[in-house]
Length: 64
Image (tube, rainbow, N blue to C red; front, side, top):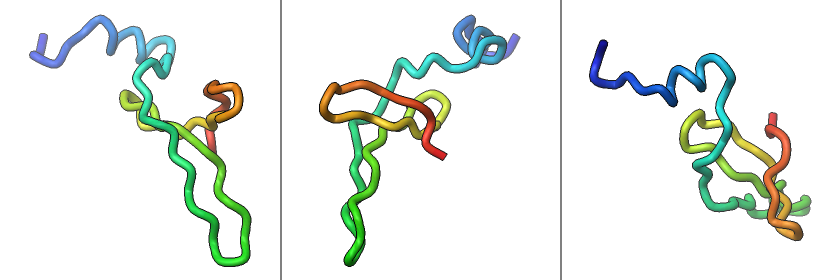
């Protein structure tokens, strides 16, 4: 097999990413005369954006 083979990668392909490695929370600044954007984190393995609740410090559902 190639040099990039790993058991973790195979498990992710079969069962999906578990989003263990996340970026720091990001909150986009408010637009002119508009509300502030939703806080989110990014999975460093699969690149998905996930909502993040700053009050309870928990990751939520995927942001679309």
